[in-house]
Amino acid sequence: MKDLLTKYKFDLTTFFGVLGYILVVIFVCWVISRIIRYVILLLIKHRKKDRFGGTSIQFFRNSVKFFIGIIGFIYIILTVPLFRNKATFIFSGAGIIAAIIGFAAQAALSNLIAGVFIVVFKPFRVGDYIKLDETRVGIVEDITLRHTVINNFENKRLIIPNSVISTDSILNHTIEDSHVLSFNNFKIGLKADIDLARRIIQEEAVKLPKVIDNRTPEDVLAGINPVDVRVIDVFTDHIHIRAYVWLSEPFLEFKTKCALKEAVHKRFIAEGVDLPIPIYELTKTENKL
Image (spheres, rainbow, N blue to C red):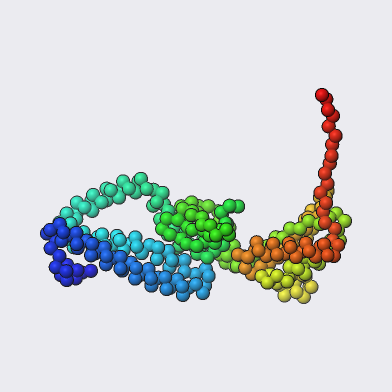
């Protein structure tokens, strides 16, 4: 941009000359921003091979437009004689204005700082499967200067301010290991054959594509089944059993649970496993009228 003044022969002593110069500088900043963002986009696509990579690059891409704008503003102040002569006054005034805006926009500044901390310390990354509570759960899609975008499993976007999500307790399913232990609960009747039910669940679980064998060599030698099935409790109308199933893909846990429940229920009916029957107690009320 250094040659803009000479190349286009702007007369910076007139209003229209200064206006034209400013517009050209803004246009050049926009072009530079677009080029940088495009290059960063290519880097992100290259890093897509690593599903959880590229978070810092994407955050930097979101920040480019802001910082290029700041640089363009400073460049205009320093190259336009009218502004340069009053630079001290402008920057001192800008400092006061910035202090006022900063006081009035503490939330925006805290979001910016929190966003930087998220990128630096990486409690989660773009592509991570995280859970804040029962309603805020999904895959991190983007981290901007102001907020974090989470795509839930209904393909809806949760927009959470960085200052909020950085102070919340987060359950990250994929920060170190993408393997997850899925709890699958079943109910059988009080007279059901527990061993038969256990065998059916184990056989149907290992048929599913995302189920993995997470046993140690010692477990394999000991003949321990890759799917552990335990009796959790016995109630008045049913027996609660739980299957502990290891999955290689946390994003498909819900789909895998549904498939397992359907397959097991069909096997229970086909092989005569006793199913729970709700017990209702009927009481007779006297009519006092």
